[in-house]
Length: 115
Length: 114
Image 1 (cartoon, rainbow over the protein chains, first blue to last red):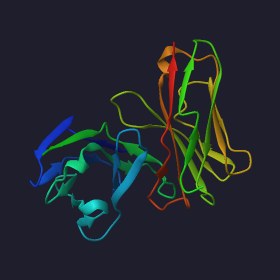
Image 2 (image 1 turned 90 degrees about the vertical axis):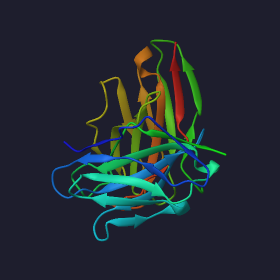
Image 3 (image 1 turned 120 degrees about the vertical axis):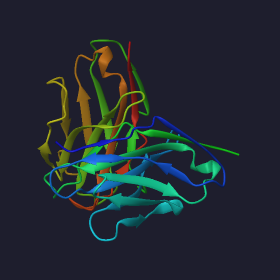
């Protein structure tokens, strides 16, 4: 079965510093991987996806993610964190069959950016 | 509308009551999903529609849960004889076609069963 794991419940980082939110995956076949963000009292918002191609994927709000097949990881990164990036981040993997958008989500990582 | 709309935003039910949660997806979106998000957890898949057809209901936790999308647009998630363990946020999401990879989520309906 497809699954993703987010090993950190919370990540704290100072504003202006680089941030990384970790995600590892377990899939059969080629992975289709996603990052979503959830701001307080808001719906989840799509950030970026990896389907195929370049291992470094760029997304919304300056975020990017690096797909690493050998480490089965898809970590979310940003070079310089903003206080407004503070939110709940979810990694997700598409569940087969691949002709649907059914996603399996991780448990989430809370990012706290301090001024 | 501009986004996915869900109602009610908050619902308090007594154990044993039936509830109905509504989702109005983005106009023209073919796919519609329902997810359940318990406190401190990630969203858990419940069911999926492609237009009016319910193609996957493998995530519905019991036969007390029922979803429909009769005209391929608005969807309703119904929970019969609610139990305390049904307390959660119920999220609706839609996508333009069946495999864009990008879901648009509503703000959710928070159900509290007393």
